[in-house]
Image 1: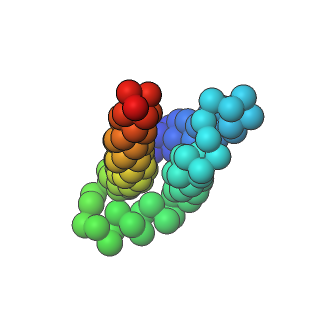
Image 2: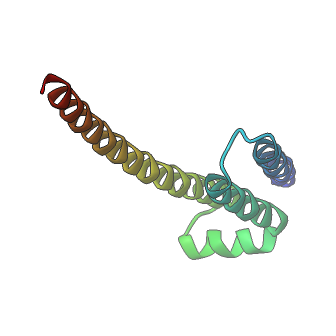
Length: 115
């Protein structure tokens, strides 16, 4: 169990460093980095508190705290992925609306040129 917690601590610190580096280099926008940083800090807190994991495992009826950790990791990343899916859907809708407005403007310019 200790080895798993140490690996999770290293991975969460690596994720924090990667996200901060990406924000600094403008590879990822700040508003999207917040969810990734939140997920990484949650994982860091979970990996640093074995007593909390034991309590969560007992509340969920799991025999091993490592199962609780893996389940919580999955839930955290599902939330992040869902949030990003919502953002992508909004961007797609905005892109469609912008393409329609552009087509209308092109039609209006073409009709003005014909007159």
